[in-house]
Image 1 (cartoon, rainbow, N blue to C red):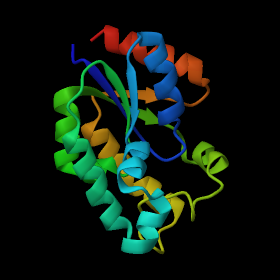
Image 2 (cartoon, rainbow, N blue to C red):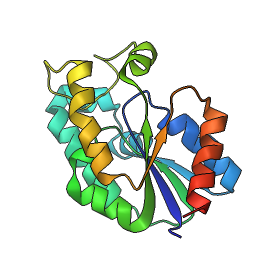
Image 3 (cartoon, one colour):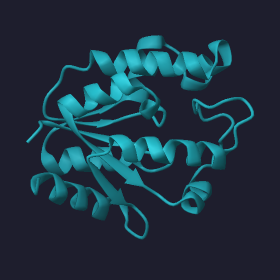
Image 4 (cartoon, one colour):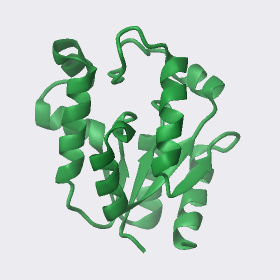
Amino acid sequence: MKSNISLIGMPGAGKSTIGIILAKNLACGFIDTDVLIQINQQKSLQQLIDENGHLHLRTIEEHEILKLNIGNHVIATGGSVAYSEKAMRHLQKISCVVFLDVAFNELKKRIHNYETRGIAKAHDQTFEDLFNERQQLYRKYAEIMIDCNNLDQEELAIRIAERIVGI
């Protein structure tokens, strides 16, 4: 079994919250790559996008993920990680990649700050366009897909742990 678990999925899927619960349940560390980027860049994700564009944020995200050399951690990734084949291959090498699959309508209820949340998207890209574009990427790289609809965060963390241990 790989020693890390990486959570991928759309903004609002619950990667950070579920990741913290999962790390606590499994007695391991937790890293949120969005927070890592903000610490290392000394700027918010939205500031990075505003100053240099969404593709620049994706480049920074790839760089931070390629630097990860850890064990026994849950890694909550940024939603745009799946655009980088290099980053995804690295995550597959060091972790079990879990896609948190949440229905579009549920995500729409959760995301109220789409334009200011620091989402790496094209300027005129709608949330639905982004969702449709990313779904195929998440499915391409996921080793495990978890249907997150109709379950609370505690139940999801338990379900992920059960699936990981069962590998």
